[in-house]
Amino acid sequence: MEETRCKFWLPKKNRFCSNARLNDSSLRFCGNHNRRTDGQWIPCPIDPSHSVLKENLDGHVKRCPLLKQVRSLSQQPFYHKGINAGKEDDEEELGAVTSTAVEDNVTSEMKRNAVHSMTVPEFCNLIKKIESVHALICNGICDSFKIPEACGMWIKREIDRKLPFQEKHVTQQASILGNLEEFGVLKNSVGVNQDDEKAAPAVVEFGAGRGYLTQMLADCYGTKRVFLVERKSYKLKADRSLRQKESLTIERLRIDIEDLDLSAVESLRNVPYLAIGKHLCGPATDLALRCCLMEQYTQDNVEHCSSNNYIRGLSIATCCHHHCQWKHYTNKKYMLNLGITKEEFHAISWFTSWAVDADHGLDHLDFTDSRMHLESIEKELGSGLPVGVEDIVRNMKAVERAVLGFMCKQIIDVGRLMWMKEQGLEAELVKYVPSSISPENHLLIAKLASLS
Image (cartoon, rainbow, N blue to C red; front, side, top):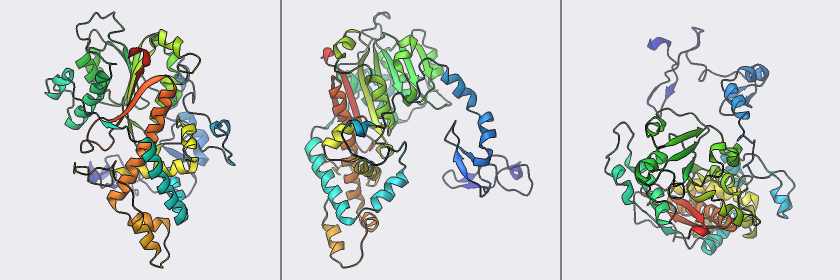
Protein backbone atom coordinates (compact mmCIF):
# COMPACT_ATOMS: atom_id res chain seq x y z
CA MET A 1 0.00 0.00 0.00
CA GLU A 2 2.85 2.36 0.85
CA GLU A 3 4.18 2.00 -2.67
CA THR A 4 1.04 3.68 -4.05
CA ARG A 5 1.38 6.71 -1.75
CA CYS A 6 2.84 10.10 -2.68
CA LYS A 7 6.54 10.43 -1.82
CA PHE A 8 6.40 14.14 -0.96
CA TRP A 9 7.79 14.70 2.55
CA LEU A 10 5.78 16.98 4.85
CA PRO A 11 8.26 18.37 7.42
CA LYS A 12 5.63 19.96 9.68
CA LYS A 13 3.81 16.62 10.00
CA ASN A 14 7.01 14.59 9.98
CA ARG A 15 5.66 12.11 7.42
CA PHE A 16 5.04 11.56 3.71
CA CYS A 17 1.90 12.83 2.02
CA SER A 18 -0.89 10.26 2.41
CA ASN A 19 -2.53 10.92 -0.97
CA ALA A 20 -2.33 8.36 -3.76
CA ARG A 21 0.24 8.85 -6.50
CA LEU A 22 -0.90 9.69 -10.01
CA ASN A 23 -1.79 6.72 -12.18
CA ASP A 24 1.33 7.06 -14.29
CA SER A 25 3.76 4.57 -12.67
CA SER A 26 6.73 6.79 -13.54
CA LEU A 27 5.45 9.56 -11.26
CA ARG A 28 6.30 9.55 -7.55
CA PHE A 29 3.87 12.23 -6.38
CA CYS A 30 0.15 12.97 -6.13
CA GLY A 31 -1.56 15.64 -8.20
CA ASN A 32 -0.97 18.27 -5.50
CA HIS A 33 2.78 17.71 -5.30
CA ASN A 34 3.71 16.61 -8.80
CA ARG A 35 5.86 19.18 -10.61
CA ARG A 36 3.61 21.58 -12.47
CA THR A 37 3.91 22.45 -16.09
CA ASP A 38 5.34 25.77 -17.18
CA GLY A 39 1.88 27.05 -18.10
CA GLN A 40 0.26 29.97 -16.27
CA TRP A 41 -1.53 28.99 -13.08
CA ILE A 42 -4.33 31.29 -11.91
CA PRO A 43 -6.70 31.21 -8.91
CA CYS A 44 -9.97 29.44 -9.53
CA PRO A 45 -12.70 32.12 -9.83
CA ILE A 46 -15.11 29.89 -7.87
CA ASP A 47 -12.74 28.91 -5.06
CA PRO A 48 -9.48 30.94 -4.95
CA SER A 49 -7.96 28.50 -2.42
CA HIS A 50 -6.82 26.39 -5.35
CA SER A 51 -5.40 27.26 -8.78
CA VAL A 52 -5.79 25.93 -12.28
CA LEU A 53 -3.93 26.17 -15.57
CA LYS A 54 -5.23 29.13 -17.54
CA GLU A 55 -5.64 26.94 -20.60
CA ASN A 56 -7.89 24.58 -18.61
CA LEU A 57 -9.95 27.29 -16.91
CA ASP A 58 -13.07 27.01 -19.10
CA GLY A 59 -13.39 23.29 -18.45
CA HIS A 60 -12.55 23.56 -14.74
CA VAL A 61 -15.23 26.11 -13.85
CA LYS A 62 -17.84 23.65 -15.13
CA ARG A 63 -16.76 20.89 -12.76
CA CYS A 64 -15.17 22.68 -9.80
CA PRO A 65 -16.17 20.79 -6.61
CA LEU A 66 -17.53 23.99 -5.05
CA LEU A 67 -19.68 24.96 -8.04
CA LYS A 68 -22.83 23.36 -6.64
CA GLN A 69 -22.34 25.04 -3.27
CA VAL A 70 -21.78 28.46 -4.85
CA ARG A 71 -24.91 28.13 -6.99
CA SER A 72 -26.97 27.09 -3.98
CA LEU A 73 -25.62 29.97 -1.90
CA SER A 74 -26.36 32.57 -4.58
CA GLN A 75 -30.05 31.64 -4.36
CA GLN A 76 -30.25 32.36 -0.63
CA PRO A 77 -32.05 35.60 0.29
CA PHE A 78 -29.27 36.60 2.71
CA TYR A 79 -26.54 36.32 0.03
CA HIS A 80 -25.50 39.75 -1.23
CA LYS A 81 -22.12 39.74 -2.93
CA GLY A 82 -19.68 42.13 -1.25
CA ILE A 83 -22.29 43.91 0.90
CA ASN A 84 -19.87 44.24 3.84
CA ALA A 85 -16.64 44.61 1.87
CA GLY A 86 -16.24 48.37 2.04
CA LYS A 87 -16.21 50.79 -0.86
CA GLU A 88 -13.36 51.17 -3.32
CA ASP A 89 -14.19 54.88 -3.66
CA ASP A 90 -13.97 55.58 0.07
CA GLU A 91 -10.76 57.53 -0.49
CA GLU A 92 -12.48 59.79 -2.96
CA GLU A 93 -15.35 60.38 -0.53
CA LEU A 94 -12.88 61.22 2.22
CA GLY A 95 -11.19 63.84 0.10
CA ALA A 96 -7.95 61.91 -0.40
CA VAL A 97 -6.23 62.30 -3.73
CA THR A 98 -5.15 58.98 -5.21
CA SER A 99 -3.89 57.98 -8.62
CA THR A 100 -4.70 54.28 -8.36
CA ALA A 101 -7.73 52.25 -7.42
CA VAL A 102 -7.84 50.50 -4.07
CA GLU A 103 -6.36 47.01 -4.30
CA ASP A 104 -8.81 44.19 -3.57
CA ASN A 105 -6.12 42.29 -1.69
CA VAL A 106 -2.65 43.53 -0.82
CA THR A 107 -0.62 40.45 0.13
CA SER A 108 1.94 40.29 2.93
CA GLU A 109 4.65 39.97 0.30
CA MET A 110 3.47 43.17 -1.38
CA LYS A 111 3.41 44.97 1.98
CA ARG A 112 6.91 43.74 2.84
CA ASN A 113 8.30 44.80 -0.53
CA ALA A 114 6.74 48.25 -0.13
CA VAL A 115 8.40 48.67 3.29
CA HIS A 116 11.77 47.47 2.01
CA SER A 117 11.56 49.93 -0.90
CA MET A 118 11.28 52.90 1.50
CA THR A 119 14.23 55.16 2.05
CA VAL A 120 15.75 54.99 5.53
CA PRO A 121 14.46 58.48 6.46
CA GLU A 122 10.94 57.45 5.35
CA PHE A 123 11.14 54.30 7.47
CA CYS A 124 12.37 56.22 10.52
CA ASN A 125 9.65 58.84 10.10
CA LEU A 126 7.01 56.09 9.92
CA ILE A 127 8.27 54.57 13.18
CA LYS A 128 8.16 58.01 14.84
CA LYS A 129 4.61 58.51 13.55
CA ILE A 130 3.54 55.11 14.94
CA GLU A 131 5.00 55.96 18.34
CA SER A 132 3.35 59.39 18.34
CA VAL A 133 -0.08 58.09 17.29
CA HIS A 134 0.11 55.21 19.77
CA ALA A 135 0.93 57.58 22.64
CA LEU A 136 -2.00 59.78 21.60
CA ILE A 137 -4.83 57.23 21.25
CA CYS A 138 -3.85 53.96 22.97
CA ASN A 139 -3.79 54.92 26.65
CA GLY A 140 -7.10 53.43 27.76
CA ILE A 141 -6.59 49.74 26.97
CA CYS A 142 -7.06 47.89 30.27
CA ASP A 143 -6.40 44.33 31.38
CA SER A 144 -9.75 42.57 31.73
CA PHE A 145 -9.15 38.87 32.38
CA LYS A 146 -12.53 37.58 33.56
CA ILE A 147 -13.42 33.98 34.40
CA PRO A 148 -17.13 34.07 35.27
CA GLU A 149 -18.71 31.75 37.80
CA ALA A 150 -21.19 30.60 35.15
CA CYS A 151 -18.36 28.94 33.19
CA GLY A 152 -17.30 26.84 36.18
CA MET A 153 -18.55 23.60 34.63
CA TRP A 154 -16.14 24.07 31.70
CA ILE A 155 -13.22 25.26 33.81
CA LYS A 156 -13.65 22.22 36.07
CA ARG A 157 -14.08 19.94 33.02
CA GLU A 158 -17.56 18.88 34.15
CA ILE A 159 -18.66 18.55 30.52
CA ASP A 160 -19.30 15.91 27.90
CA ARG A 161 -16.02 14.02 27.62
CA LYS A 162 -16.49 13.81 23.86
CA LEU A 163 -16.03 17.57 23.56
CA PRO A 164 -12.41 18.65 23.00
CA PHE A 165 -10.80 20.42 25.94
CA GLN A 166 -7.75 22.63 25.54
CA GLU A 167 -7.14 24.79 28.56
CA LYS A 168 -5.84 27.85 26.68
CA HIS A 169 -8.88 27.91 24.37
CA VAL A 170 -11.35 27.29 27.19
CA THR A 171 -9.76 30.11 29.20
CA GLN A 172 -10.04 32.52 26.28
CA GLN A 173 -13.65 31.57 25.60
CA ALA A 174 -14.56 31.97 29.26
CA SER A 175 -12.98 35.44 29.42
CA ILE A 176 -14.81 36.57 26.27
CA LEU A 177 -18.10 35.58 27.89
CA GLY A 178 -17.00 36.95 31.26
CA ASN A 179 -16.34 40.34 29.70
CA LEU A 180 -19.78 40.29 28.09
CA GLU A 181 -21.30 39.55 31.50
CA GLU A 182 -19.20 42.23 33.21
CA PHE A 183 -20.26 44.75 30.56
CA GLY A 184 -23.92 44.09 31.38
CA VAL A 185 -24.82 42.46 28.07
CA LEU A 186 -24.91 38.77 28.94
CA LYS A 187 -26.96 37.23 31.74
CA ASN A 188 -27.24 33.68 32.95
CA SER A 189 -30.68 32.64 31.73
CA VAL A 190 -30.56 28.97 32.74
CA GLY A 191 -34.03 28.25 34.11
CA VAL A 192 -35.47 31.54 32.81
CA ASN A 193 -38.70 31.51 30.80
CA GLN A 194 -37.71 30.34 27.32
CA ASP A 195 -39.97 32.93 25.68
CA ASP A 196 -38.21 35.81 27.41
CA GLU A 197 -36.00 37.01 24.53
CA LYS A 198 -34.81 40.05 26.49
CA ALA A 199 -33.29 37.73 29.11
CA ALA A 200 -31.81 35.40 26.50
CA PRO A 201 -31.24 37.11 23.14
CA ALA A 202 -30.15 35.11 20.13
CA VAL A 203 -26.43 34.78 19.43
CA VAL A 204 -24.65 35.20 16.09
CA GLU A 205 -21.11 33.80 16.14
CA PHE A 206 -18.97 35.11 13.28
CA GLY A 207 -16.09 32.95 12.07
CA ALA A 208 -17.61 30.20 14.18
CA GLY A 209 -15.32 27.39 13.02
CA ARG A 210 -16.39 24.29 14.95
CA GLY A 211 -18.62 26.37 17.21
CA TYR A 212 -17.11 25.70 20.63
CA LEU A 213 -17.45 29.30 21.84
CA THR A 214 -21.18 28.94 21.22
CA GLN A 215 -21.09 25.52 22.91
CA MET A 216 -19.77 27.11 26.12
CA LEU A 217 -22.31 29.92 25.83
CA ALA A 218 -25.19 27.44 25.48
CA ASP A 219 -23.93 25.20 28.31
CA CYS A 220 -23.23 27.99 30.80
CA TYR A 221 -25.74 30.74 29.99
CA GLY A 222 -28.77 28.92 28.63
CA THR A 223 -28.76 30.56 25.19
CA LYS A 224 -31.76 29.34 23.21
CA ARG A 225 -31.15 30.43 19.62
CA VAL A 226 -27.79 30.52 17.83
CA PHE A 227 -26.58 31.30 14.32
CA LEU A 228 -23.11 30.07 13.33
CA VAL A 229 -21.55 32.02 10.44
CA GLU A 230 -18.62 30.21 8.81
CA ARG A 231 -17.53 29.98 5.18
CA LYS A 232 -15.56 26.73 5.57
CA SER A 233 -16.73 23.20 6.22
CA TYR A 234 -15.42 21.62 9.42
CA LYS A 235 -15.40 18.14 10.88
CA LEU A 236 -15.82 17.49 14.62
CA LYS A 237 -18.18 20.42 14.98
CA ALA A 238 -20.03 21.25 18.18
CA ASP A 239 -23.28 21.18 16.22
CA ARG A 240 -24.08 17.56 17.11
CA SER A 241 -23.85 18.29 20.84
CA LEU A 242 -25.75 21.57 20.47
CA ARG A 243 -28.60 19.89 18.57
CA GLN A 244 -29.12 17.52 21.49
CA LYS A 245 -30.31 20.47 23.60
CA GLU A 246 -34.08 20.44 23.24
CA SER A 247 -34.48 24.11 24.15
CA LEU A 248 -31.87 25.29 21.64
CA THR A 249 -32.43 26.25 18.01
CA ILE A 250 -29.26 26.23 15.88
CA GLU A 251 -28.75 27.46 12.33
CA ARG A 252 -25.41 27.30 10.49
CA LEU A 253 -24.90 29.81 7.67
CA ARG A 254 -22.09 28.66 5.40
CA ILE A 255 -21.20 31.98 3.82
CA ASP A 256 -18.39 34.52 3.74
CA ILE A 257 -19.11 37.38 6.18
CA GLU A 258 -18.34 39.75 3.30
CA ASP A 259 -21.49 38.53 1.48
CA LEU A 260 -23.90 38.15 4.43
CA ASP A 261 -26.95 40.40 4.60
CA LEU A 262 -27.92 39.68 8.20
CA SER A 263 -31.18 41.62 7.88
CA ALA A 264 -32.35 39.11 5.26
CA VAL A 265 -32.01 36.06 7.54
CA GLU A 266 -35.71 35.39 8.02
CA SER A 267 -35.42 33.59 11.38
CA LEU A 268 -33.39 36.49 12.82
CA ARG A 269 -35.64 39.28 11.63
CA ASN A 270 -36.77 41.56 14.49
CA VAL A 271 -35.01 39.29 17.00
CA PRO A 272 -32.59 40.80 19.57
CA TYR A 273 -29.14 39.24 19.30
CA LEU A 274 -25.56 39.32 20.54
CA ALA A 275 -22.68 39.20 18.04
CA ILE A 276 -19.59 37.26 19.13
CA GLY A 277 -16.38 36.06 17.53
CA LYS A 278 -13.14 34.49 18.77
CA HIS A 279 -10.04 35.41 16.76
CA LEU A 280 -11.70 36.93 13.72
CA CYS A 281 -8.77 36.95 11.34
CA GLY A 282 -7.62 40.23 9.77
CA PRO A 283 -10.36 41.97 7.77
CA ALA A 284 -13.02 39.52 9.01
CA THR A 285 -13.40 41.76 12.08
CA ASP A 286 -14.18 44.77 9.86
CA LEU A 287 -16.58 42.69 7.76
CA ALA A 288 -18.42 41.50 10.88
CA LEU A 289 -18.69 45.02 12.30
CA ARG A 290 -20.21 46.26 9.05
CA CYS A 291 -22.50 43.24 8.88
CA CYS A 292 -23.96 44.09 12.29
CA LEU A 293 -23.81 47.86 12.32
CA MET A 294 -23.42 49.56 8.95
CA GLU A 295 -27.04 49.41 7.83
CA GLN A 296 -28.61 49.56 11.29
CA TYR A 297 -26.71 52.35 13.01
CA THR A 298 -26.56 55.52 10.99
CA GLN A 299 -27.00 58.89 12.63
CA ASP A 300 -30.56 58.99 11.29
CA ASN A 301 -31.85 55.72 12.75
CA VAL A 302 -30.00 54.94 15.98
CA GLU A 303 -33.13 55.61 18.03
CA HIS A 304 -35.31 53.56 15.69
CA CYS A 305 -33.04 50.52 15.83
CA SER A 306 -32.64 50.79 19.59
CA SER A 307 -36.39 50.60 20.01
CA ASN A 308 -36.58 47.50 17.81
CA ASN A 309 -33.94 45.71 19.91
CA TYR A 310 -31.90 44.24 17.07
CA ILE A 311 -28.26 44.01 18.12
CA ARG A 312 -27.96 44.19 21.91
CA GLY A 313 -24.22 43.75 22.28
CA LEU A 314 -21.01 42.69 20.61
CA SER A 315 -17.80 40.94 21.67
CA ILE A 316 -15.10 40.22 19.09
CA ALA A 317 -11.56 39.01 19.75
CA THR A 318 -9.39 40.38 16.95
CA CYS A 319 -6.58 38.44 15.32
CA CYS A 320 -4.00 38.37 12.50
CA HIS A 321 -3.88 42.11 11.84
CA HIS A 322 -1.20 41.53 9.17
CA HIS A 323 -4.02 40.40 6.86
CA CYS A 324 -5.93 43.69 7.26
CA GLN A 325 -6.83 45.56 4.07
CA TRP A 326 -7.40 49.27 3.52
CA LYS A 327 -10.47 48.58 1.40
CA HIS A 328 -12.18 46.58 4.15
CA TYR A 329 -11.09 48.67 7.13
CA THR A 330 -14.03 50.35 8.87
CA ASN A 331 -12.40 53.64 9.88
CA LYS A 332 -10.31 54.98 7.00
CA LYS A 333 -11.39 58.51 7.90
CA TYR A 334 -9.95 58.18 11.40
CA MET A 335 -6.62 56.93 10.04
CA LEU A 336 -6.38 59.72 7.51
CA ASN A 337 -7.15 62.29 10.21
CA LEU A 338 -4.22 60.86 12.20
CA GLY A 339 -2.01 61.39 9.16
CA ILE A 340 -1.82 57.70 8.26
CA THR A 341 -2.10 57.13 4.51
CA LYS A 342 -3.26 53.98 2.73
CA GLU A 343 0.34 52.95 2.05
CA GLU A 344 1.33 53.57 5.68
CA PHE A 345 -1.70 51.57 6.87
CA HIS A 346 -0.52 48.57 4.86
CA ALA A 347 2.98 48.98 6.31
CA ILE A 348 1.53 49.19 9.82
CA SER A 349 -0.55 46.06 9.23
CA TRP A 350 2.60 44.22 8.06
CA PHE A 351 4.47 45.31 11.20
CA THR A 352 1.78 43.64 13.35
CA SER A 353 3.14 40.20 12.45
CA TRP A 354 6.21 41.10 14.56
CA ALA A 355 4.11 41.07 17.75
CA VAL A 356 4.78 37.34 18.14
CA ASP A 357 8.57 37.67 17.80
CA ALA A 358 9.30 37.92 21.53
CA ASP A 359 8.95 35.30 24.27
CA HIS A 360 5.42 35.78 25.58
CA GLY A 361 5.98 33.23 28.32
CA LEU A 362 7.89 35.92 30.22
CA ASP A 363 5.20 37.81 32.07
CA HIS A 364 7.56 40.60 33.13
CA LEU A 365 7.81 41.87 29.53
CA ASP A 366 5.63 44.94 29.14
CA PHE A 367 5.22 45.68 25.47
CA THR A 368 2.71 48.50 25.71
CA ASP A 369 4.81 50.84 27.87
CA SER A 370 8.02 50.40 25.89
CA ARG A 371 9.02 52.63 23.02
CA MET A 372 10.97 51.93 19.91
CA HIS A 373 14.50 53.35 20.03
CA LEU A 374 16.19 54.54 16.86
CA GLU A 375 19.70 54.71 18.31
CA SER A 376 20.70 51.39 16.70
CA ILE A 377 19.50 52.62 13.32
CA GLU A 378 21.39 55.87 13.69
CA LYS A 379 24.47 53.91 14.69
CA GLU A 380 24.24 51.82 11.52
CA LEU A 381 23.83 54.95 9.44
CA GLY A 382 26.89 56.46 11.09
CA SER A 383 29.04 53.45 10.24
CA GLY A 384 29.51 54.71 6.69
CA LEU A 385 28.36 51.38 5.23
CA PRO A 386 25.44 51.31 2.78
CA VAL A 387 22.34 50.51 4.80
CA GLY A 388 18.83 49.84 3.50
CA VAL A 389 15.51 49.30 5.26
CA GLU A 390 15.77 45.53 4.74
CA ASP A 391 19.10 45.52 6.59
CA ILE A 392 17.63 47.61 9.41
CA VAL A 393 14.65 45.29 9.80
CA ARG A 394 16.91 42.24 9.82
CA ASN A 395 19.09 43.71 12.58
CA MET A 396 16.28 44.85 14.85
CA LYS A 397 16.01 43.02 18.18
CA ALA A 398 13.07 40.65 18.61
CA VAL A 399 11.70 42.67 21.53
CA GLU A 400 11.91 45.91 19.53
CA ARG A 401 10.03 44.29 16.67
CA ALA A 402 7.43 42.92 19.07
CA VAL A 403 6.90 46.33 20.70
CA LEU A 404 6.32 47.93 17.33
CA GLY A 405 4.01 45.08 16.31
CA PHE A 406 1.85 45.49 19.42
CA MET A 407 1.66 49.25 18.91
CA CYS A 408 0.38 48.74 15.38
CA LYS A 409 -2.19 46.16 16.48
CA GLN A 410 -3.57 48.58 19.05
CA ILE A 411 -3.71 51.47 16.60
CA ILE A 412 -5.76 49.37 14.17
CA ASP A 413 -8.13 48.16 16.90
CA VAL A 414 -8.59 51.62 18.43
CA GLY A 415 -9.72 52.83 15.00
CA ARG A 416 -12.36 50.09 15.02
CA LEU A 417 -13.35 51.06 18.56
CA MET A 418 -13.86 54.69 17.55
CA TRP A 419 -15.96 53.60 14.57
CA MET A 420 -18.29 51.63 16.86
CA LYS A 421 -18.68 54.65 19.11
CA GLU A 422 -19.56 56.75 16.08
CA GLN A 423 -22.39 54.28 15.36
CA GLY A 424 -23.97 55.10 18.72
CA LEU A 425 -22.63 52.21 20.82
CA GLU A 426 -20.99 52.24 24.22
CA ALA A 427 -17.73 50.40 23.49
CA GLU A 428 -14.38 49.40 24.98
CA LEU A 429 -11.15 47.77 23.85
CA VAL A 430 -9.58 45.51 26.49
CA LYS A 431 -6.90 42.84 26.84
CA TYR A 432 -9.02 39.86 27.79
CA VAL A 433 -6.22 37.34 28.53
CA PRO A 434 -2.54 37.72 29.44
CA SER A 435 -0.03 37.60 26.57
CA SER A 436 1.34 34.38 28.05
CA ILE A 437 -1.97 32.69 27.16
CA SER A 438 -2.24 34.32 23.75
CA PRO A 439 -0.51 37.35 22.23
CA GLU A 440 -3.72 37.83 20.22
CA ASN A 441 -5.49 39.22 23.28
CA HIS A 442 -7.50 42.26 22.15
CA LEU A 443 -11.27 42.19 22.67
CA LEU A 444 -13.71 44.70 21.20
CA ILE A 445 -16.83 44.84 23.35
CA ALA A 446 -19.90 47.03 22.88
CA LYS A 447 -23.55 47.43 23.80
CA LEU A 448 -26.48 49.70 23.13
CA ALA A 449 -26.23 52.87 25.17
CA SER A 450 -29.86 52.28 26.20
CA LEU A 451 -28.77 49.15 28.13
CA SER A 452 -26.51 51.15 30.45
